[in-house]
Image 1 (cartoon, one colour):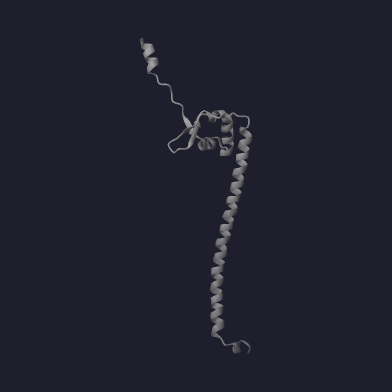
Image 2 (cartoon, one colour; image 1 turned 90 degrees about the vertical axis):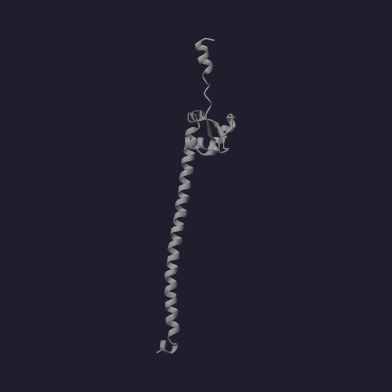
Length: 129
């Protein structure tokens, strides 16, 4: 065997790298649902990572980023994110209002107790004179 043949023989074929489907969706900035639809139609080779998540070959990131439907899916993901943020802000506002309401109830409770003490401490005859 020649040196060249030995060098070729010893070269390792690079292992194929895989990426988890959810990581692929995050990398592309898309909803996982859209990526899953594309994967179902492409039927790629699947593997499991160390966390037992389904993975596809990493070159699908490049394939899907140049796909014709990528821009539509990206707009859809952005709209979904905007909707999620609006809902989160509304929940945050509700929580703030609830805190304010509870503080007001504490203050009113003090006023009510003061009024009860005053009312119980005076006779009714004094109120009508």
